[in-house]
Amino acid sequence: MTQSSQQELLLDARGLTKYYPVKKGIFGKTLAVKALDGVSFELARGKTLAVVGESGCGKSTLGRLLTMIESPTSGELYWNGQNLLQVDHRAQALRRQKIQIIFQNPYASLNPRKKISQILEEPLIINTTLSKEQRREKVLAIMAKVGLKREHYDRYPHMFSGGQRQRIAIARGLMLEPEVLIADEPVSALDVSVRAQVLNLMMDLQQELGLSYVFISHDLSVVEHIADEVMVMYLGKCVEKGSKEAIFSHPQHPYTQALLSATPRLNNHGKQERIKLTGELPSPLNPPKGCAFAARCRYKMPECEQHSPPLQQYSAQQVACYYVQQRKDD
Image (cartoon, rainbow, N blue to C red; front, side):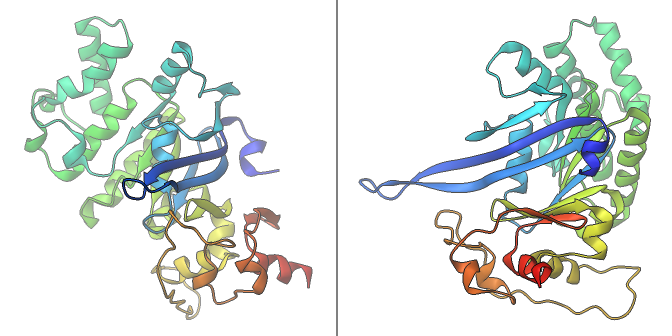
């Protein structure tokens, strides 16, 4: 039983896929780019699931599917047991209310022509029946929670620093009182000195409001600070999943081991071997027949090039790797 299933299960994704059709030439056949290829996870109330991997692994696509910015090609998504992918008004309203997103770049995600008050009130105008005065009071209350002052209410985005803009973006995500926030690289566009402030703010809000986060990042040092569980992705698939402690102390998949070996750590005990990956990510337009990581893996076996390994439970985490399976069987 996973950590999520022992607590109140809030979000349950099953086999989510996203394929983009691409036509080769005028008369060529249509192929599918498999940006996301059968990803499943569970998220408990008040917990943070970190989704990590290098560029092109599908983590941002997952974030867009969870917020229904894009619709999945197939799969299921449940909130408290209720199907969020139903095509009806009630399910759509529930998605908007319960799941919100914080985008990576606060410079691009805020409309420069609108005041902060207009940006923050917009979700309330569209989704609630609050009066103008009630909307103003709610906006000011949320602004105070994220560390913004009342005098910021009528200012424009260009009048704020990067850290303040991301606080505004977080405030916008909280306006409908969601239970799940999708944070897509929320601190990667910020100065290093500001990142810790925003991360600590997010953790304080989680504690105060009982929020759950899907935290998408390529920075494992940030993930180690904020996550409860970690899902490692490679070419649209999950290759390893488990608690933060298990992933960081005993990574099983060769790809996870390589990612962690490249991450500076303050609490390293002894010298850590740096694992250098050679080659590039395979094309999602033409993925390899077997394991997508096989061409870059130092433990590659003949079976890896013939079949895609299933995600299986090994001690404290789930891993998709024939080498790990063989090692456990020996």
